[in-house]
Image (cartoon, rainbow, N blue to C red; front, top):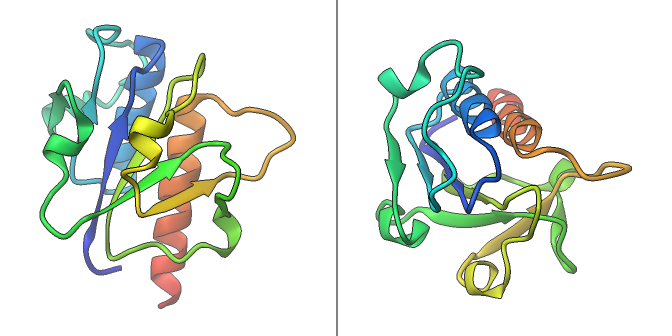
Length: 144
């Protein structure tokens, strides 16, 4: 697939999930991972030491690091969000994921062009959701 993907983590709940999200980002070729909040320091779940190979950026506002002409995509269980299964990923995407103990909220979702959700029977954890979305992007990109 042409273009790139980047990951934004809004107020991630645990370092364990951030470490696993970093690992997913490296596995699926994301350009960088940005996060807000003070909950992350380091995590044993980043077994590949992904932070050494792709940027991990701590910011106050995720929108301050969205690259030029990149589409912000809210990934959350939102009314009106599109099902990931039928979603066509933008060439340049900045996927924003919320915390496990909350939601993204309108301050973020109102600024996102696209809103998607992963269809499940329940809530997935943050890292699992990052894996599924990035895998879906990669798999669909190979078919083009």
